Amino acid sequence: MLAPAQRQITDALSTVARDGAVRAGRGLSGLMGQEIAIHVPNVRLGTKSDACDAVGGEEQVVLGAYLSMTGDISGHVMLLFPEKRAFECVDLMCGQPIGTTVESDELALSAIGELANIVGSAFVNALGDYAHLVLHPTPPVLLNDMAIALVQSVYAEVMAQSGDILMIDTVFEDHSGETAGLLIVAPDPECINLLVREAA
Image 1 (cartoon, rainbow, N blue to C red):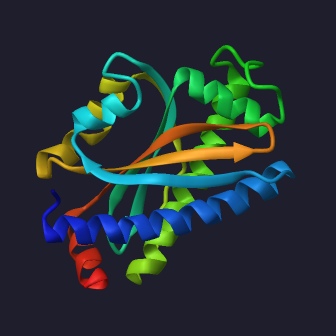
Image 2: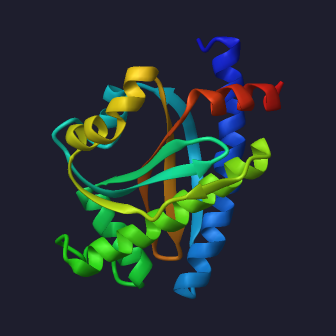
Image 3: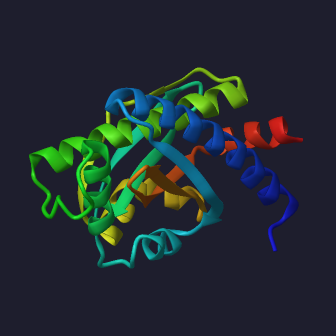
């Protein structure tokens, strides 16, 4: 059972996530020239271990990208896919049959980086509008390693401050099918306070 403050944070960030998904879907559809919808069926708080479990376990090889947000507050955003799901996303973005992409080549990495840029930037912009903040996403940094290595390396400082991060299940869908990834968000404590006040 979530404490009232945690429920407020989760509800506020669920609203932000849904808005970000709509924005990202529009941006991705415009880029690809085909309709791609993005859904966020589940938004929850969790630990580093929960984040690893959500992408297949600590030793699961994942692809994705990391962005930080700067401006009125700071924070961290990471979009991760288990390798198979990442390849499915590349196929979806390229209009190819699912199963066409089978390795992390230059095209695959470029596609995942662009996808993370669109999704991460849309979330950061939606968060800024919701909390009335000026925020700027940094360019994405590509990630390709075991889940535990990525989560530990990128979030070591954040985890030292707070045990919980926000995990957003992110589903990408077009006419040919769907695939899913995990959007991980770790805003700084000041952002959490602002969200609680905004949601009150």
